Length: 182
Length: 73
Image 1 (tube, each protein chain N blue to C red):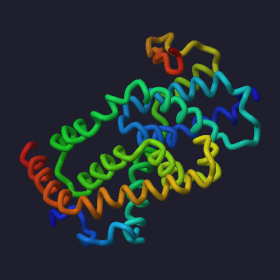
Image 2 (cartoon, one colour; image 1 turned 90 degrees about the vertical axis):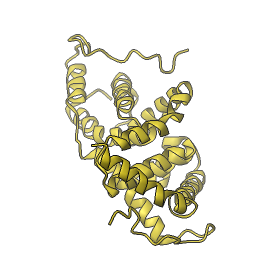
Image 3 (cartoon, helix red, strand yellow; image 1 turned 45 degrees about the vertical axis):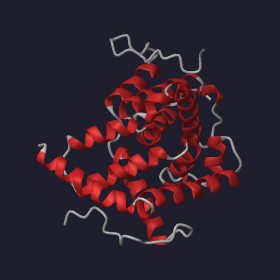
Image 4 (cartoon, rainbow over the protein chains, first blue to last red; image 1 turned 120 degrees about the vertical axis):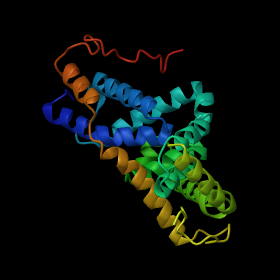
């Protein structure tokens, strides 16, 4: 369909959640915004292929997810370096336990296999149904369910079970470093 | 008061997923996500869509599209 005013407004209204999805996937806000921009360009260039009445956010998320995956293969090394950049960020920011906890969560999320991470984000944060998430990822509903479950188990193990001894003292040390560095 | 984990230290055996932990993961995931959603639409994207809608070539005023070759070679 052609780009009507209402469709344009709907696309614009999807930008905040597209950014949140992109940042959650990539862990980097500058790259995430490039992904969103590329997604919008692709969407507008291919707007004729959008089926009126179908789920616009799901269509846009599919474009972004596919762009991220093709991009990811080329930048795998960079993504794997993300952990290092987190610890740098931590030292330059105020020591707030909520902030530390947040960074720990983000770092743990980044360690998940990509399939599991995207499934968890789509269902647990973006609020898509399992069916929509399956359509976005191009897989079966059952596959999405098992990816979400595995993602939750792994996060739980990293953050709250296996990592308990590590995370406790580590956080305190980092809090001290952060506090004295400013 | 510096304890970053209000949760009790050993909440669940490895095999079972404690519902408290699940709720916590869900909460953190949404908090992270909503933090970005609340930032709204950055001018960059509003401008981009306005220009494309008006038939202008984005980047004509220097903003420049990311001519990354995503999807190409």
